[in-house]
Structure formats: C-alpha cells, structure tokens
Image (cartoon, rainbow, N blue to C red; front, top):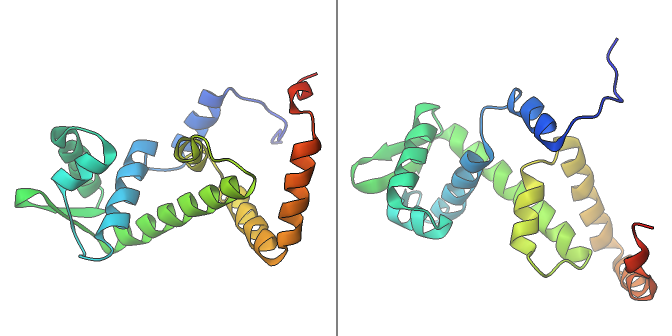
Length: 164
C-alpha cells in the first residue's frame, strides 16, 4: 500500500522527480531559451544563447551537444542550433509553463525578483499544479474585481505575523 503522507526534503523530491524525467532544470532553461529565440528565424546561434543565459560559449556548446544527443536539437557547424520537432514541442511547453507561473506571480503582486521567483517555481511545479495555476489566471482575467479585493486585503493585512 502506498503512503501518500510521506515527507521528503526538497532534495528528496527533486531526486524523485529526476527519476521520472530526462531533462535537468538547466537543460530546460537552455531548451526554453532556444525555443523562445528561434521562433522568428527558426534557428539560434551559440553566441546569442550564451549571451542570453550569461554563460561561456563553451558551456553553451556542451549543453547544446547534450540536447542534440537526446534528439531535441540539431547542432550545425559555426554554432547554429535548430530545434527538432520534439524540441519544439517541449520548448513550447517550457515557455508556456514559464509564462503561466510568471503571470500568476505578477497577479499576486510579485514585482521584485520576478524572474528569479518564476525560475525557482517553474522547475519544480507539477503539471497538475500548473494546470490549476493556469485556470486561476483565467479566473482572475475573467474577474478583475477579485484582484482589486485581494490588493485591498493585502494592504490591510499584517504579514509580519505570518509565522506566529
């Protein structure tokens, strides 16, 4: 019988998740960025990728080679990267996941460190939770009065006592 009340450390949950997927968080970041920036031209250059992710070109090349080894990108001489069909599909999901989490955080008033907060959440959120965040975003879009009520509530709340 499976015990659904088992607790793990964050690292424990990460290890459990790792056993169920083939992409690391870093690989996801690279694939998302390649997808995001190859939408117009259909390809991306290693130099641009390394600039956008603030890594050395050699690091970007190694990661692109790893992505190529699992069939998500085609890497051509002179640093040109093309997504395969699988790479496009996963890249689209990763970008959508990022946008869903970011929109939710903006809605609840997170402005400081928005990108960092989004990155920390997106790599660890389950598909079920992501679907519900997506629905909540849609609910907020359809009911803007709820957002203003939440903002009023936040202003009146004493968040300093949150852990008492």
